[in-house]
Image 1 (cartoon, helix red, strand yellow):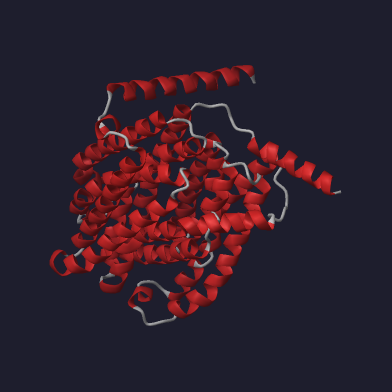
Image 2: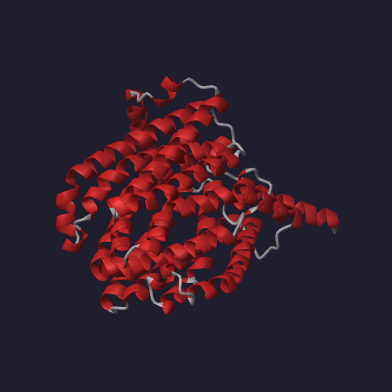
Length: 458
């Protein structure tokens, strides 16, 4: 019996280990196109929320979402990055990865209740920025967002980038349709916006599970205790970075929730969402790069991705800023015009964040997540100290400056440590090359050609 069980385990592991035959640059190209499309759809979501909720409602919506996101990040160590890492190393199969992520997400959500309820019913200013029932409704998002994000990262580990792109676009499209139906048509306001986000993550989860069942033999399988412990240990190693990364992304809203108004929170949240959305370009590149680092596919690809990330992000930012004033005036209510100066302030931080994403991908894939933790902690400290100091003088612009200063500090530390670890010279890594653009274009053409060949033989 024991030998049979071991044989079955090896069989499942072998099935999970099958990887699509693609090049690193093809994977980068796939995710680049996918997440660029997601960025465009995300802009549509921002416009819809702006028109349906206005600054005050958007502020209430954001404090609830940030609260749920922080709870999920704090209470689910290993659900995403622990399972991802050991799937990439082929130490666990898809069934154990999904089961581990689900258990951690559910346990974390149960633990969240006794911690969240006293806060929601307290007199803390942050929890006065939205209705109590809306905060309670947002608690449903804790397991949904945690498990959805974990499945997202597992598809990266399996190198199923096309499928991940399709399901991610499905999630965004579902969010758009849900906002139109629940918020716009049914006029459920902030509660409806929270429901719409929950529906989109639910659709993403179902789609991912069905794919894994069909292609990876996903079954109800309890994770082996040793593997589960290893997942938690890796997760805890990166947990500080995970919490601080989420907190850093939303620290402006958290602090403004204590000292500012709903309208100011709504304005800042939209400005930061529009600008930081450009980091999706870097995320697309880093997502495809991570499994290649674990597989030691070569340093040349890392350097190429660093250059691609910051040049592509900088180009998009420049175009957007040049058109920002007429775009905001045309597509958003007049109440949101004050965000234009905030966009310019956040722009340098966005570029630094894009570079940081690739560098952090390198450290995560090299089993050095503690460096990520140190960098994001530094960025958080700079952000957290800057905002309250600058707010009395600059008002809402202080939150934008705090974001940029924090991102720049994080990027600088990561770059210094990266060059010390790799002993690489600065110029070959950071100097843009004309060959990068031609290489990306050639890879996109090759990818489309292979896609046409597959369809013609289908």
